[in-house]
Image 1 (spheres, rainbow, N blue to C red):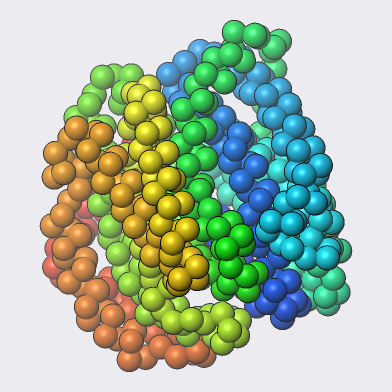
Image 2: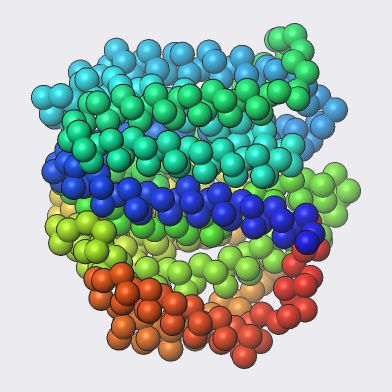
Length: 474
């Protein structure tokens, strides 16, 4: 097995557990709490995620871009970014602790909301350092170690959810959640840095990291507002139950991230190596191949989720959460488009042209906000779903234009067309066989996968030699 296949398989297993396990814990949570209390939990976590994205995510991505361009300064970069993360997380956590009463007034509006927000504030350093460690494992090609910690973190969440199912106490559950995640994350960071010789702090290196993260942080923040800002807007403009319903549909759609991430995980280091060799044609081919394989995987997944979404939510949760497959389908399409667009983001990162991404994502965030202000009061979570899809489509369009490359250079439209054709017989099968029971859904999903899988070989979408050559991707 080539290193490419090994990395893809290991990362895929870790991500499927990381994103798939919440589909099993979700039924326990919504039975442990009522729909409003579950909504409070989602809202509090959304606030913490915003704080994480505000600084930590962009800084971690900046580290990746700098390591690719300056591999001889690894130790110095790793040491100084650790210091920056400690400072940043301290400031953000204290800020959320102090502002908890105000945040509760505008979002949760619950009697125990302030206490819940303060507990969840501890998730800021946890999520931030988890992302830093993930970047280190990725850049140092330690995919197996990274996947092991993804699984451990998912199991830690499962432990907390099982406790919630029996205790029915949201605050105790929140404490156990952050403590279990915190212990695993501390171990994760220790393992990530164990083999790295730390150097002295450098004012110049710190400035370089901050400068490099300026554009990327803006991109991360704007992208978060597009992806998760809908929940925040629902919390402000609608009800906690609407947040819970929308989040349940979004959680199901995040399985698409698990399908995409193994290929995105490998792409950035691969195109970084090509960029150092000034192999622009090789970079284009890598991105095109990556997008092509993602078309093959994501196209049936989006359509399948749209068809089984209602039945899946009825099975996992209650009929209150099942608001038809349209909401799940819209969100899934938006998530898929976002993952396709990430391929193009990486191109700007390695070319040190991330400043070109700032106006794209800022305008997308503004567009998302404006549409949501009108759509959510009128259509609640359906309005948020439409807005998510439209905004990600807008971002992909702008990204493609910014590359100044012909559409056919990046996207294999023939492959996408054939995938859509194959989704027609697959969709008929899924539509006829799916219902809210485990057996029916297994038959529906399994049969649909077989129909689509056979079709991609019969129509020549994917050939045996394509699979053999896929390992040459990197």
